[in-house]
Image 1 (cartoon, rainbow, N blue to C red):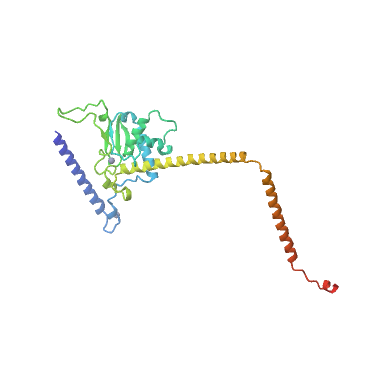
Image 2: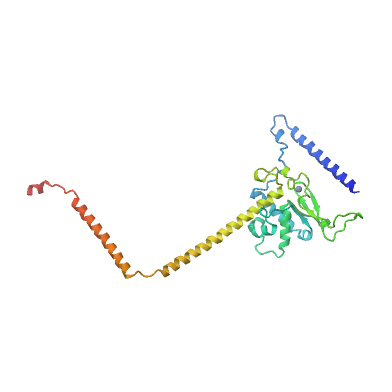
Length: 292
Ligand SMILES: [Zn+2]
Ligand SMILES: [Zn+2]
């Protein structure tokens, strides 16, 4: 039975591939020879997701996050697996929740009573999934590859209708947040994501997680700096106050010294003034000359 399933899966995959090829050709060839869309019709980065720009990733992540909170009861007990994260680059969902600006995820100001639900919802949202409810059945959806995961099959009490005697698969199975996207999905596939520069070779999950982690770190740095400057200015005021209070009254010697300095300055000024008066050219008046 397993072999049959595998064969079915394989033929499904190759059918999908054939479809993609056929439509790619149709999209391009349907245009006239010189039409720019002929080449642009199927750019090879057609699947690339915009996950770096804040005005794109923030509202989309927020939407997925809240849609998952809406089905929190269905994700609470589901076992999930994510790609291995380098903690120096990627912050955990818990950390992101506490350090991201509140507005990014539109978290209520009051601390949520069930933060493990929040963290799980964020983890799943970071991997491109949103939550939905279809006739009472809660699902995870990918809007890029259209994959759907029925969450009821991953609940602790779930018993599949047929379990082979020698079926070693664990029940309930784990939701693999990356591998459960379809092959070509950029959330899973770095080749279709076609990221460039320092992000090249990463799928959309990795890129988004990195971008969100950077956003949280920047927020922490900003609030640290704000704390520091507030502290510093308080400190400065204190210091100024203590200086004013503690500065001793000038001593007698100091007063005499200051007086002497003032006197000597005055003398210099006077001398200068006199010199200027003396050296000023005298107007020669003919009348005066006649008198003398
Ligand atoms: Zn055209
Ligand atoms: Zn997908």
